[in-house]
Length: 143
Image (cartoon, rainbow, N blue to C red):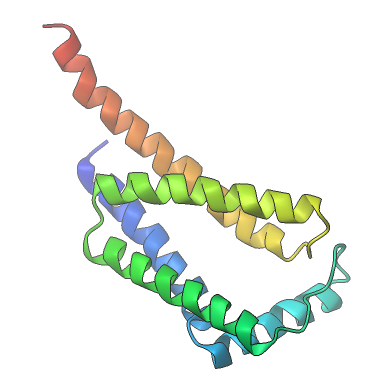
């Protein structure tokens, strides 16, 4: 595996994250996206609790985390390093764990689509990072 493959994967998941999180970066667009999630929950007759009505303080925190996710995505788009990929892989694992927790506690199954992509990013980046690490460590162990 070439380092450029790892960089392309890190950048690719960052572009995905940018597309998914940008709509959550303002209270107005976040409210609209939460409405889309509600529509999907109802339209697909998904199990789990429907999206609640978000008050201004809820939208503030959604937008705050949306802004942070957008900034993190931009960092990885501009500098798709192995370190950024490793940090992102750990973050994806944590976010996936919180999604699983929410789903087991009855949250809308709309989260399942997000969970699939978090897990995919975690496993793909993680595998590439472990493979790159093994290739770097293996030659030095034989000396």
